[in-house]
Length: 360
Image (cartoon, rainbow, N blue to C red; front, side, top):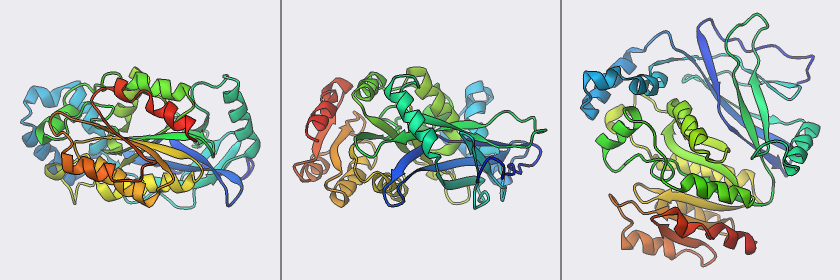
């Protein structure tokens, strides 16, 4: 819709919204640039009864003390889980000077999604500025949530990261791949998620920066909950992981509870990565994960499904749950065009991407 034909998002008083980093891609069938946008509307003033039950279960699972629960870190991390979803809200976004009213209202969990056609000239300008080194480390178009002129809520914005049709993309897991989580122990995983400062895996940010300088684009795909997005984004910014699209999942109280909270859900992760591969059919991909959960099996499945698209699978070997010989042999049985490497330190995989680039 054009700049003269738009309304505004109909958030209720007290409701807030978050926009997440989105994927911008060139749609070969439609011959235009598109963006997959995603966000969430919530009301922080009320706490659903199911969430209060969840909170009590979480405290028991972590064996948290009253001091732990009262800490600033815990209160900040749990905040996203204590909100009421903003259901059936109309969402209007602005990218450049174009306005987009999403076709569907927010879902029961407050999430909203849309696929938008981006303004061609604005995309060309953004990519040109990036090629000249004028627009930061990644080609990105800012997007904003449109609210009424008399609405004094804080501005809500994020970026659409433009990924050219051809090139190398890094699809990276988060927990225990670039962030220390200890997902092999439920108690430690919960404590690292809710009680302790987030910490990056040593050297991974420097390695990713090097790969970005070599022309790679980044997509962070994790089964960490969207409710932790702001804390994860702060970590990525603080240690300077390259910016890129982010793809997490929603945590649903009624069918999971924290006793079943795990950082990996295989089907959703496979679907998300397959969606990225389909939207970027001419790019090649390096998949990076860890041995703690199902990354080796997920990446093996994807490499068999998209044999010409996956250039390398890199698995960080965790001391608490190293990759067994059986799991490793299944990975190495893949097509010889897929570089499979198990590593303990980032230095061991620094040369993989230049090798992939030279083999294009």
